[in-house]
Length: 86
Image (cartoon, rainbow, N blue to C red; front, top):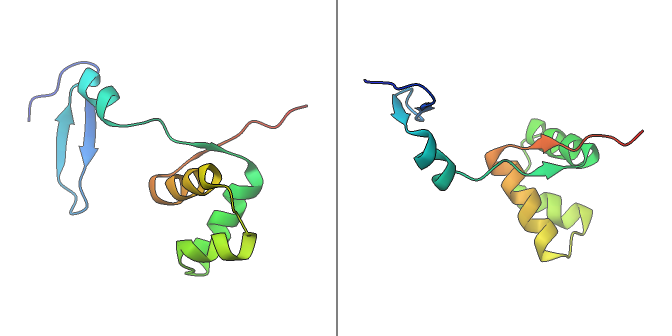
């Protein structure tokens, strides 16, 4: 595999690796969602207890579609925890 400076190294589900050019990577992959720590804690708790994603919406009564989408992306793709304000 040829790797150039600034390339990204992707890892597949079976451990395979490949290089992705930086410009292609930035066009293809979105930044991770930024979520409050309380949601990050909830996601981790639900995953630890082997709950399904849908349960988080039922239990928390998230009715706003945009918030549901944000939490679903965070659950599936990973997330960055929002910085706390001093």
